[in-house]
Length: 253
Image 1 (cartoon, rainbow, N blue to C red):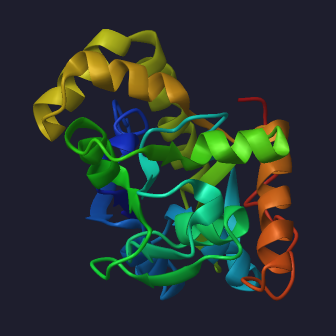
Image 2: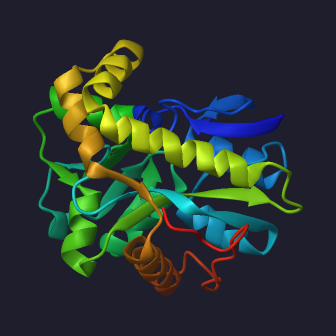
Image 3: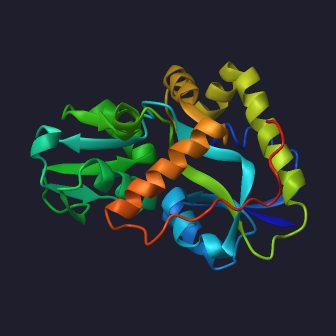
């Protein structure tokens, strides 16, 4: 049975809406799944884009799936008491490698400190970011929107990777996950209602949130990913930009 990692945030609801596959589902925050995948404890999982790049020599990619946005994503927020150009210290979450590096790319002058330490701004991701948008009147800056304004490209936060040697059945599992996303898109009200029951957010809010997320790893997403990795290298977060190595050649999504 394939050991399939699942990010424990609500953003995974469309991918796991109706998965017709026999898998062992293992949940965790992004950095935990990164560690377990690289250690060979999972057969495939969504992994932070930057962590894929750092371990690309040992990993392969599923060619049709990612977690991306073209513009605002809602669930990755910089909560700042100062205008961005005046931010000199950012408290960063330990849960996401890509978002931390994206913050460094967008605000290269700012020092990073642990979440909880007093700073000009704090980085929140996932459900904590969604919750904060409801509860905290401090200005929120959406990193997906800031990235689009800078590059004109989608931001790929996670890719679906698997360690080598690749386990049997991954192509069929990818088909099932892609089909689940299609069904979720075809039944947005059902998706929002079921996700609301599971995660506790209003269904209308989730329906709008899911519309902003992209799961298809198409040409624009790949261009956005390569641009992000190049900029990550430029700020010292990546030694070199790897090629994207896939499990098999991409087929039309």
